[in-house]
Image (tube, rainbow, N blue to C red; front, side, top):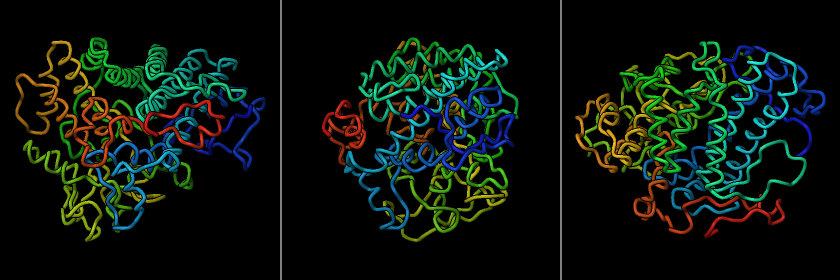
Amino acid sequence: MKKQIVIPLIILGLLTSCQDYLEFPPEGEIPQDEFFSSQDDAQKAVNAMYGYLRIWDISAFNYLILGSLPSDEISKGSSPGDGSWANDYDNFQHTKTQAQILDFWSGRYQGINLSNQVISNIPDIEMNADLKKRMIAEATFLRAFHYYYLARAYGGVPLIKGIPAGPEGLVRTSLEETWDFIESDLREAIPDLPETVPSSEYGRTTRWAAKGLLAKVLMYKEEWDECKTVSDDIINSGPYDLYPDFYQLFRPEQEFCQESLFEIVATQVPGEGGLSNCQFAEVQAVRGQFGWGWFVPTDELAEAFDAAGDTVRKKVTIIFKGDITEDGDTIGGIDVMEGVDLPRYNGKVYVPKRIDRLIGPYGCDQNVRILRFADILLINAEAASHTGGDAATPLNRVRARANLGPIGNPTLEDIWEERRLELAGAQDRYWDLLRTRRAATVLASYGFQTGKHEWYPIPQTEIELSGGQLEQNPGW
């Protein structure tokens, strides 16, 4: 990696300096000794770090492909034959040389690089001391955020903790070491992050967002006592609650509502269509009417809602061709869709026609909801189930919003099923199946092979570039 800072020409629309997008030479590269000399430079680097989150490789195609297609809740969708290669992920036929595997890996490491630039360079800038600590904490959180996705997908990965001068750091660490590093970054960041932010800074990390991700990391580490302690703290002391209307929760007006711990901002900025929007909603939206029509809910998911008597969340999560939404839009789309008998779409990313589109494609300013309070409640219920605590109360808070009756003594299976229904279409189901060791059973008919598909392969290109230092995952 060259000794230079590479900052994408991107902005975070809701940061304080939201109107000052970065103007760099055509290559988008500035020698390191010409940057990071002022507080303004530091703010630009932080803006770039956040703005990067909305790009294609972080919040669109490979994020959705690796995080949802192999599960039993999402199928490719779209028109038959369109992007038929994506069915390799639906059927566990993907290989170590496919582009999406590489893009997921390289996209996250570019995000880590942006964080490391901030962490490494801002300490030497003469600037407001409190702001400096906050910026470093934000970068530390986002470094952990990217490693969290890498750990779920690949297992133990190389831990690059600074700006490398050469090929060092290419050796993989163990999964345990990777999770420990993520946890350490989050715990280091928490004290220097603000409890809340003003509306002008929505999208910037708060202390509660870092605690929320920490609770989720502890869930993956199966450190249940500490997971319960952290999630208890968020529930009892944080400024969060469930938003009462499940349909309205996913409309643009409820971005950053009382249920939101962390979202990726995709605000439209007129005149800067390439810099300020996200295709997360567009690629999933109604084909031929709003978007591409990919990543559609499966029959299995619809049947799970029906089996639970869950009409509230089903109606919001799955919108079928011919439905009329609460906003009065008739869902059209195509007549024949790959993977399902009746065409349908992910209703959580539906943006009503009444929302003005200033620039870009449909839904280009739909934020990506990363962490909601409902998830924290269900993490807390699972931790309580493992530690002998009260799992019923947090679980039933989530069920009550869906007009479902309480469960008096919930089992782990009850909690896992609630996660399936509450978080459907939010890129959690596949990772949950792997985490709880149910993938081999639930996904056997899709082609899941024990001893191979617990992890994605390390991209073959990366192994070759490392000169063989990177070790491939088993079965690949």
